Length: 453
Image (cartoon, rainbow, N blue to C red; front, side):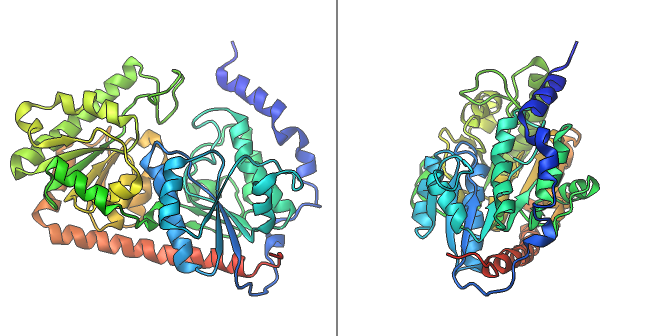
């Protein structure tokens, strides 16, 4: 019997550009070295950035204002166009409020310069094209749907043919199921830069032969985030009776499908099988132990906050409702999902943030708040990012580390909070240095462009 993966690969071969690989590899297409434009010191370059993968996940919201702030800070002369392949009303409201000069465009990439509308107009104007932070450049990690892969790669082929420098900013790489590696290696080796948000991803793409001119560690764009909604944030703190600097924030990621899932599930939002439910039970027992220890030893509060929309349901039923009554009195469960600016205004007042996914933790570090990351290793190489900025002691494997180890590190943070704050400051200095260096690469490409505006 043929497996689903085998069937997917046959479908991949039929539908993908693999049938035309000899054409892609002809000498008429420029190689990576051919993409370096002659210096012309362009004063007002246009940067086109594709971002904002989802409005139902705090990280997918946070990538966008973070990277936009870096572009504004380090390339203030640039005209920035933000491309959303699909409407993102939550993110778009956030961007319009905080980045009024950024033009937002929506729609799919057609590749037809004459009939492609504002998307193709943006590509014609672009001096640099950036695919923002995430893990979308994988095949077989979440699914075997070739259409989604081509929607990411086709714009890059257009850039290659039209000599537009392009690159990936703060990306993670985990899987290129056969035979997709050939396509990805061909396209991304022609990128002007690939910045990976974890060192393990960088090792991976080097090992399989990627040859882009610049391949380096570059932190997730979300590290640049500084947006706030103080009115909403302070109102929520007052409503929840949370005292500044005296509450632990706990951010979950459960083995559960999206609230509107049809039942298929994926790596990050799996179908609720007995095995996945048992795994959640073991993980959340450790989180409950952490909450119990915090409340009973410090007397301070806990906020259970949502990393993703689905946790406004599962965080309650699987964690909050399971707490013992004496502890529950000190725990606040946030009922509603939020945008990144309100979250930032609340996180800024937290004592420490514990999380199973990285982006609320990134926001915490950007605000100077200590963090603990107990991630499921199966969620990918992105889990190493905090080690790579100098915080290995705050990184745990949720499935292997005992609750006592996580509790011990939280206790150290609480007992010597000035030291913990210094660790945050030192880690963010590493981040800031890499942000400056990575943006210098983008600026050089943009301002050296020979394309006409």
